[in-house]
Image (cartoon, rainbow, N blue to C red; front, side, top):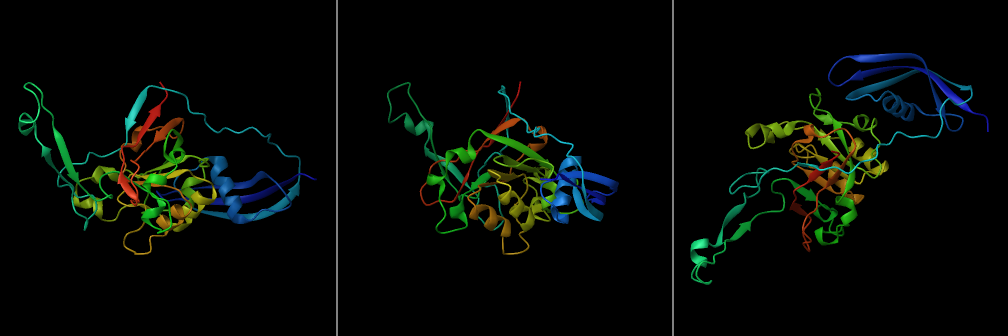
Length: 300
């Protein structure tokens, strides 16, 4: 088959201001044509652009020309290491994670003082009790959270949440609250834990945390689903826009069996790639959401 390339001009605007242009840009293509949307994704990925707002494709034409690329990829390979980064918030008695949901109650079931009457002299134990809803602290959503026939925590495949290759998508400082699909194109997200770093965790335990938070668009969720993301996490109040009641991001991701981790923290301490990620909840039957303590392992 004759090798084809696409030749075009482009204009890119960024969500944090500014833009970039290119003239007579060329890319190898498979087949005889390529649509503008796919071409926009290639531009973002090839130039490794971040915080893209809009890509405009101009003066596109297809030419016959030998391809300039081989088949090699630059997908990062995570290396073993000893540094652990805790990506969870501390759960404390009386704290509010989500307005309208009850705060956790943490108390004694059997105090150390009371246990002395039960055990031999010199032996004592503390047995604690906690009462909480699943949406407390940093937590993981399974399909059962959204869909009655979706799998619950007990049936969550461990491979989905343990020792995953991770990537970070940085959108901190973006002018728009809505995080669209273009933000994810520079990264290879297939079979990865995709962690969205918005910086919103700086507002944790303040009134600001509940108002005007960054969130994904439905198009972003569809892109992550179609690109085969293994898990999606975010350091914001919700992965959806809570000013609306439709929750399309939860619907798309959980409908595809992709777990969601919300209310994460310290994502700014992670590299963009080259780390392993885990967020394992307990095996609880007929529960769709539960607190987790996610962590990342970085190379030494």
